[in-house]
Image (cartoon, rainbow, N blue to C red; front, side, top):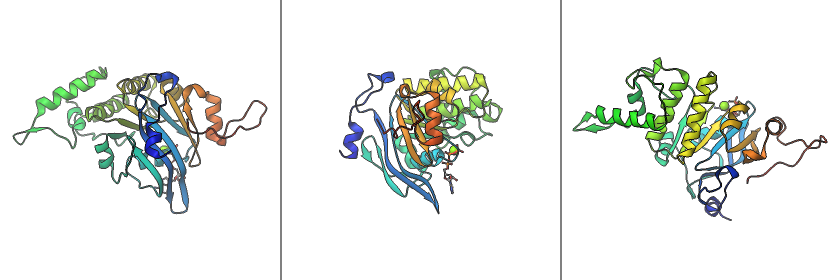
Length: 278
Ligand SMILES: Nc1ncnc2c1ncn2[C@@H]1O[C@H](COP(=O)(O)OP(=O)(O)OP(=O)(O)O)[C@@H](O)[C@H]1O
Ligand SMILES: [Mg+2]
């Protein structure tokens, strides 16, 4: 079966049983990425579907950040294929990825501290009328987008983002992705430096993105977060995809086994073969 046909093939998970049959947005096949002698990704397969939250997990150095940066156009792959909406594509820059509808929310780099919320949400895509910034229109859209995501803790959309809490900063970065009509939002450790309440808020937002039909690919070390928010789990081990599947296929112990051993151990201590995609 060719790549496009596989992308269009029907598949649904118990959590999203009535998802459209062609919901796969992104399909990565055999992705290879080298840094000199280091083989960071050695033939990675990954499918990401609309309306699903896919958690990408793995031990330190497993290749999670390299994988998402390659999807986001920051790194060029040394091999393999990436298909977007059923068609092979190559992203050379983050701008190419953004044009397709792929937005990445990085933990610390997402926002310009000295700018306010509206300026951040429209950074690089400012609206103008007659050569002047259309502040009213941008304020209205920013307010609507935040309200649509039920972000209610921000006091003023004109406050500099430096004055926001970590969770609020994440919320602004996520709202920006929504405002720009992204189809896939990638998040690298979005809750790593957040407290319990703020983590809850960000996870709620992640769920709301999926409810709106966006695809979310979220990197996390926190298995509680993963089981709270993910509908699918993908486990990287030493640059290979050790297991992927609906969250109902996993429990925390199994995820840890795939993360540390690259395979799941059966109750008698034997290891089972690596689980394959789908
Ligand atoms: N720019 C780079 N140059 C050289 N090697 C790199 C580079 N980026 C990543 N690597 C290597 O690629 C491998 C995967 O790194 P990556 O950052 O993707 O890990 P990770 O899964 O995100 O880990 P962590 O959980 O610690 O963030 C590591 O061996 C790392 O040292
Ligand atoms: Mg990383």
